[in-house]
Image 1 (cartoon, rainbow, N blue to C red):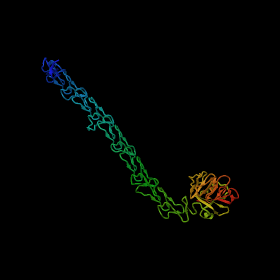
Image 2 (cartoon, rainbow, N blue to C red):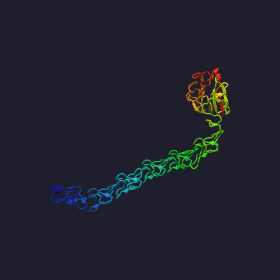
Image 3 (cartoon, rainbow, N blue to C red):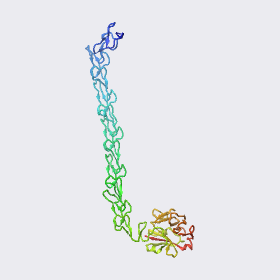
Amino acid sequence: DARAVEGGACLACPAGSFKTAEGDGACTACPNTFSTNRTGCLRPDDCMCAAGYYRPDGVTACVGCNAGMAKGWVGYDACVWCSPGSYMGDQTASSCLACSPGHTASTIGLTTCRPCDSGYAASAPGSTACSICTPGTSSYDAVSSNSYGSSSCPLCSPGYYSSGSGSDSCLACLPGSFAGGVGSSVCSPCSSGSYALYVATGCLQCLAGKYGSMVQQSSCRTCTTGTFTSSDGLSACSACGGGYRSQVASGSSTCIACAPGSYSNPSTGLGITEVCTSCVQDTYQGKAAGVVCLNCPTYSSTQGQMGQTACVCQANRTIAPDGSCFLGWVSGIQANVAESTLLAAGWSVCYKQPYKTAMKLSDLKCGSNRKIAVGYMAAGGSTLPLLAMGVVTAFTEAGDAVSNPVLTASATPLLHNGVYWYLTSQAFGFSPTSTVTLNFQDSTPDNCDRRLSWTLGGDSGGFRAGCTCAFGCFDVRDLSASPDGDAFLKVVYAAP
């Protein structure tokens, strides 16, 4: 190999030079555009076209490679076209450059790479073709604000979508629809009772007082006067209904009940500008949210007033628990009541038999009458030492407390008109307190002068008339047999 002195040592001539003779002389550089393919060359002929140059036929000089071509070695060979996926825009290139991401070269010999069209992307260097963006993605690059030359197809953000392939940008969800996650290919419509604004990631429920009757709504509608929605997310308003009116002019979340003494239509309800109708004279409504006013009972009136909650009984008459005005009605347990007083007040005798007489439940059913007065008297007497009044709608063998509010089938007495009543399959009676001792009939000694108990069913009667009874009382007498059973009478009076 040809060598030259450098730094006190003989070194091989570097590539691009040669030396023809031995000695201390220097290496000779190859002419411009020429080089050698190794070190230590000895002859001028070892100089050939450098990388990036070639020698055309019939020419002695080396010529630079054209753009779109390259030659990476020393020699006279021709330059090579840049392969697909690469390019070279300059002359005398020793190598081609790979297309950067977002660009492609589909054929050989290109001087530039072509950027991907909108809706397409190329992620790898040296790509020969762009890939189409799939639904739910687009080629838009937020950093460059371009949709072409993209290196990727980003997923659509929440609130955006792309429905088809090759989208250059994601579209915003229109009001009434939403896209909750990334990569949506469609916006979903809001269901009834909800709504969504522009670019929504979810739907919002219509608030109380508003409604949404259709799907894909951009806003909720306000309930009109006379209607309301009491909770969020409803698709329709409800009418306030009879006995009510709107809370506010529009957008009510509740309705206000008509006050006692007034009413409203039973089907539509009222708007905020309307008022509940006051009851006319001689009618009343004692409760709120009334849909009708009730006529005053017989022997009562509103004394010329409107909007009343109750009627006033005429003089000398008392209102009974059933609402009627009755001349001879008294609450609580009474003592020493003259029978003539009851008859004069409108009561009539329904049942009057000696205590020893067997008594059935049907004996208490005084026809169609609604009121009864129950007591006892001495045989041949005209005064009742003990008497109590009650309203009875229907007696049944079971003592149905629903259809019969006075009596009960259980051993627990029912308070009515200031008196505790009880009815079982074997006994009927009343007490001043809720304490009764039903050994078939009541034998409680306390307050004996205000207790009454009759045997029901079976073949015999009896049991107690105040403090007199067969056992457990102060005056022990068997009222189910003669002579004591003839000394006292069981009496039931009735009135409409």
